[in-house]
Image (cartoon, rainbow, N blue to C red; front, top):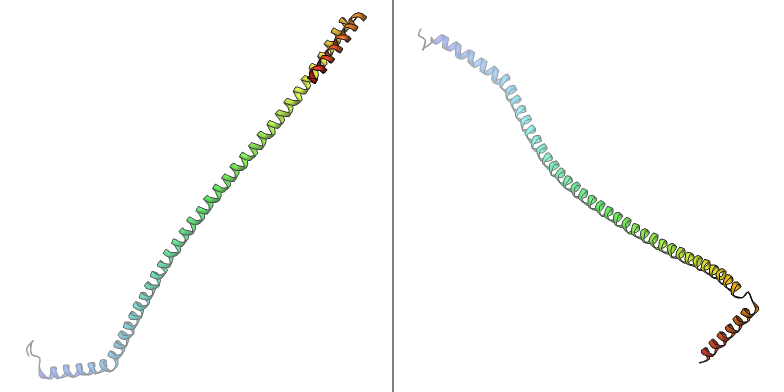
Length: 170
């Protein structure tokens, strides 16, 4: 017996055992193994298909998210612009109102000052008139203390009145 060439009896039993084992494996083992491999292949294919669909959905969701972010930014810009315009309008209206109020206050102050000025002038005139009358009374009393002086004053006034009457006619 050599190592490279086995004995024919041994070879026969080895081939027979191999054939039986192969037949048992072919009948019972290989269908189970190939079925499991087929299930595994289907599971992997299904997982790949689901992963591809999920990837597409994620891509669509990311596009939708980007679109929504862009819309939100546009809306934010629009709202900020409207707020700035509203602020400017409010400031402008407040300035106009303040200017109108200042103008009204200034007008009222001018009217009050003018009224007080007129009142003060009237008061001064009345005081001057009273002082003039008092002074004139004192002067006339002093000058007209005699009957002769009184008569001279009357004649003088009559002459002035008649002279002014003749001047008006001319």
